[in-house]
Image 1 (cartoon, rainbow, N blue to C red):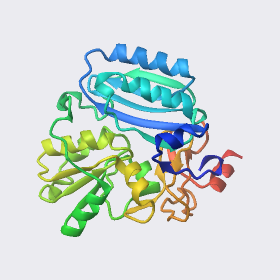
Image 2: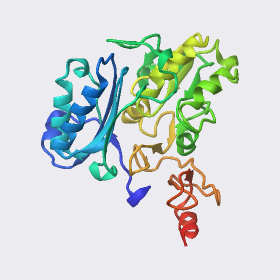
Image 3: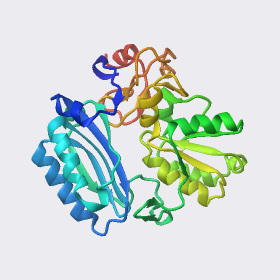
Image 4: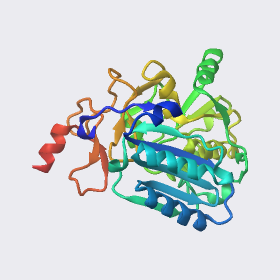
Length: 303
């Protein structure tokens, strides 16, 4: 993990937030029809710049997906201002340790999708969110479903590099390099044998499973669920005591984070196979391919 830090996702009360001045990262998404994504992009960019925040924001006709960091006070002002837009008023926000320095810059872009499955025309959204997505499960409801049924399938909706360092125990982990690969994987018939079983999709914060569960339903999966709030929400409640094992890959300078100390290390170094959570460009810092590689092997490659 960069800087040797072990961060923990937390949900904090407004009183607690107000009493500290410390860097924080906030993440949220909203699926809702947006008639003018470019206008939303300009507003979000100006808002973040005025508050001195960094992060990644994607705006599309289907909604918004944002991860923003900085000092907690301007981040709180950002959240309040974003919620002032009626379509975003009910956005579900998650806070985590970190800050603006975990992002190289502020990036606010418009795209055809807020999650790049490459199928914008297959997804419909209304004011309630994605149409025909999977049934939502809270973390406790996931445990209840698995206690009631012995044929539940946990389906990882993240890329292979993410699931290599952390995943739900016993989950199906598609060999996807990019999010768009999931469509070809589903269309290949590789998982058709799961179509009559209860399938629970999960991802980092829930946004990819909003789309993935709808794509699976459209392809004949009959009993599809999504873990509401994703791994982040699950980890807030159960940490390393439940189904989750390993480290969580995140999309900022931290690269990985944990929900607590003492959990299992499931990642294995590509070079020496030793246990590690470290994810880096490899074989050198200019390389574009991310790999699970321990600090020692990374240092040797750079020397």
